[in-house]
Image 1 (cartoon, rainbow, N blue to C red):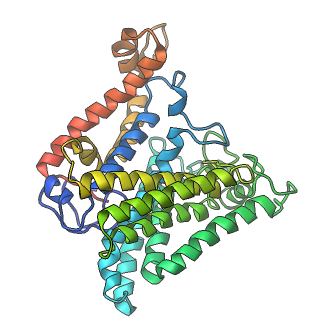
Image 2: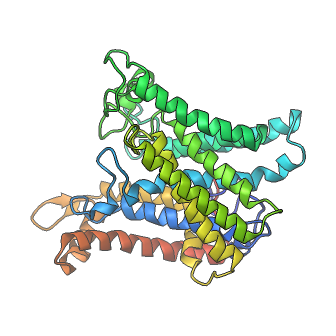
Image 3: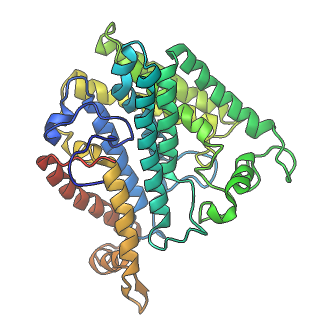
Length: 404
């Protein structure tokens, strides 16, 4: 990556529509959804909020993941991001598909760019896993950026090579097939199918392919972004692909588009809740009910923003989300890298203990001003969002859009 606008991926892994001269012009390009940039920005702001509390020991329940089954507001963030990836890639590749679909050498060039950019995203995810120790013997292979890369790659190919009808059938097939695998297929070495953290089929497959040393460090026996879970994650991306194709239809008025998206989104969320007793809503397993529930909410959320920002033109309030939205991957990566870098600097904390620079700033500069440690922890996360806003706002004014 560099500090100037590059002809590469946009902030969700999709191909850029055009190379803007400044941030404002990018957000107002013909055919570009302001609501999509706003949705992306709000999502990454929420991601920073829940990933960077001042004190991990004092967090309000809505800002934590569900312990296993269930869904908190925090559990909506990652599927919203994958949904956005699906929407974005349609706006990037639809022009190519409308020309009759890429064939031969053209298809090779398009897929080559898609593959290269998915590889960069996957590589960035590995870099975050390696930093700062660079211990290849224990590096986590899968992760958030790695899953984004695989969903971007798979959904791009499916969008280019299949029709909407086929995509709907694939969506249903992914969800039903995944349910059959996890609910009915026996787990080698453990017996009957189950949905427990360490003995489900996905956990067994990850240990078989990667080995325990290369799984999520908090468990080392299973991984919430594991291989098998990529299948339903593709379904989340496909929901975004189908939503974008509906929004791009020229034969429907904005009001009709929004109305049908609300109906579809509400119906999907309801189906997810109905399915929950048999195949529980679960982020770590990325269950099919979780896909429907979170995908339906994402669809309704984008529909609301589309009506407000694009159809009605109410955009005065959108700047904070826009400045985050156009540099989403940058702020996600840098916030993680800086947090780990600060952890390398050991300083004295109150009570005679030591901690990283981030903990030192929090314990001396924020925590003493709050009686409730949960409020102090929340203030620490909000402070980081404000700091990043000023950095990203300056970049936005200067037209610095970092792409990977």
